[in-house]
Length: 277
Image 1: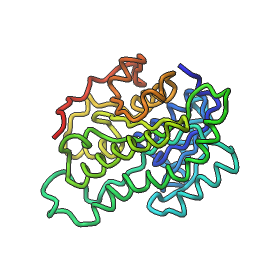
Image 2 (image 1 turned 180 degrees about the vertical axis):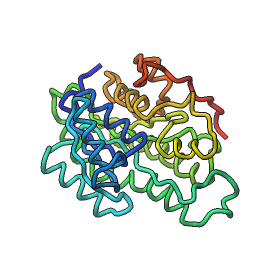
Image 3 (image 1 turned 45 degrees about the vertical axis):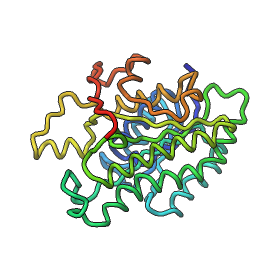
Image 4 (image 1 turned 120 degrees about the horizontal axis):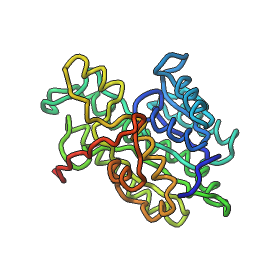
C-alpha cells in the first residue's frame, strides 16, 4: 500500500457520521484533512471537533464551514485549500441531508417534494459541484511523478443504489451517484485520477444512534463510522486504486482484504446483499 502521510484531503459533511469517521481515519494515516460542514462553533458534532480529532489521530485538521446546498460556498472551500495547499489528493464526497421528518417508508406521494432536494440535491448534485471544483487541484497532484498514491474522488453511496431502501428519492440519489462515479472514472482515466464508490453497511451514525434510543433498533452488528473510514483510507491507499476506478467497493470486502478492525478491535459482520431491485 502507498503511504498517505502528507496527502491533502477534503471530506465533505464531516461534522458527524461517516464523514467524521473518514476524516479521523485519514488523520491516522497522517493526512491533512479539510473538514467541511454546516455545524460550526464547537461542540461534539462540529467541524472544529472533527478537525481536533484528526490532529489527535496524527494528521492535520482544518475546519471550513460550508453549506453544500450553496454553490458559492462549495467554490470557496476549494479556492481556500487551493491557495493554501496548491493541490488536492483526495476528495471524499460524503455530505448528505437527512429529510426532516425522515423518510423511513411510505409512498413517494406521502413525502413533501422538498425531500427530493434534500436527498438528491445535497446527496448527488453537491457531489458533482464539489468534484467540478476539485478537478484542477486533483490534476496538479496527478502530475507529481513522486506521489506515493494516486489522486482520487471517493463517493460515499449505499446499497440503496441497487435495491429499495427507505424511499424512491433516496434510491434515485444513490443510483445516480453510482452512475456519476462510473462515468467520472471514464472521463478521468486519461488524467490518472480514480473515481470509486464506497458501500457501507448499516452504520451507527449519531442520527441512527439517536433514532435507536427512541425505537429500540438493534445496533449490535452495525459498523461504526470510524470502521467505515478506516476501510475508505485503506482503499484510497491501495496500490491498484486506479484499476479499481469505476467500481463499487463494499466496506466488508475492504475490511477482509486489508485486515481492518474498528476502534473496539472488532470487524462487524457483512451487510446482507439483496442484489439489484
